[in-house]
Image (cartoon, rainbow, N blue to C red; front, side, top):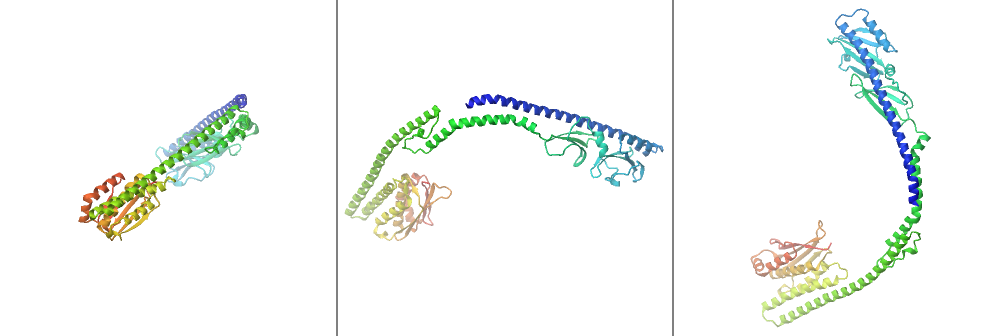
Length: 502
């Protein structure tokens, strides 16, 4: 139905629209052509009149400057200019001293100071007195003639022969403007303007024509194609909305509210004669049934996998505890101090690995990784519990943000803390170890692990122990963490950047 309505009304609308636009374009072109002819004609008439008067004025000025003028020359000039100007000619001839040598019977308009009579402009607009003044100087520059043209005289000369309504003639010289004539209504509307240069070329004649006010017939002829098009679109929208858009919106809402595991029944809420939409709803129902079946199978498989993973971690943790117990039993049967210390050192590292697995097992359900704070706390308690007798009063202070790390990071960190705490216990058994972990504000996925103790300060014994064993172990752990381990011997401080889970 929408296709039939569109095909039936679209040609009519396009024909009417093209015809209306063509008529408007033709009228605009005709008006522009008339305006171009009118402004060109007015400019030529005005230029010819000014040039004719300038020629007569130039002959008189040169004759007076050369003292060849007869007594009747001013009268002949006044008669010649008066024949062109029905309002009465206005001309005035001065010498360098400011003396008036010849003039018309009318008073001279204001606007030109006595000292500016010999200025350079050939013609000058005087908007305050509504005059155009034409200036002619003699060849020797001692005499100047000024001819004034009133606005009424300029209008009579520049009035075009073509009949243009709502026109306005304007003379412009730089920023100075003189309105020569204005006819018709001054109502607001679109204005077309064309300009032509006069001689002298610094004066421009501009003719502006305003469009006639809009009438009901003109508006109807312009907007009728749009009305027809709107009617066709409205009817088509109504039909398509009822038969297509509304059922699709309801179907989209049903699908948007779908939760995995449910079985969709969209056609219970959607009623439409469109068989394609009905088929689409049935397809959604079949897909939802398949998804529900797969969701159930995946949930069962995931539960089985979670149980297996939990069992693996539980068994690893138990095996590590068994190994630690066996090492403790063997350590009790040892009699030499070096053997006892070796067993204790091995047990501390097994306990560190056990602590990592225990914390990873605790966080397994939330899948957040291993918590840094509980890992270091439990590891510190285990290290103090297995510390040598001389280091029983060794203290560990912990400052840590609530951060989580992966198991791949937790294992080398646990061994790193174990190595450095054991080293500090050997170097300064009665000292304090300060462990801090703070997140990097610039990078949420990075944190800085800092361990500081008096036992980690630089010394000959410290250098010897690092060279024997601890240095190689610390270097290997820093490589595993993919970050350099920084050591400040003066402050007894080790620092390394680690990767955390944002």
